[in-house]
Image 1: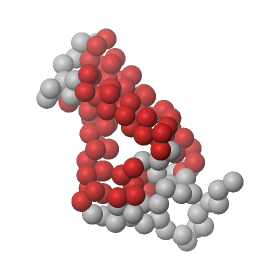
Image 2: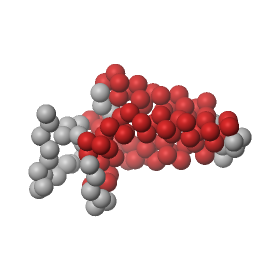
Image 3: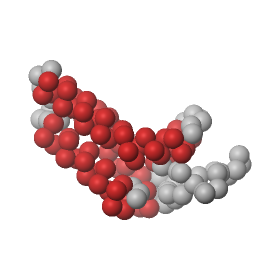
Length: 121
């Protein structure tokens, strides 16, 4: 069983170019269903899910020194920096298993079922 972080232990990350790219990619994942066509977004979401299945982690985390241990995810790091306390284990489960599949479904429902056109392409 993994050891939880102590109350005083802080998770760190380098805020380099890859970190900001990761922020951009994460933000685009959430607004993507409204900006980009489903045939671009759904494969992108599935690649993220495959990354978690094959490598068991987000590959960008290592590029900005975010350790992928003690149930830390990029999302939990961002929440922590914003002062929001989250259950890291539950968040990690949702990020790695459900969120990107739900976003795929939202994209398909918004564009294919409801017939909404993406704002960009």
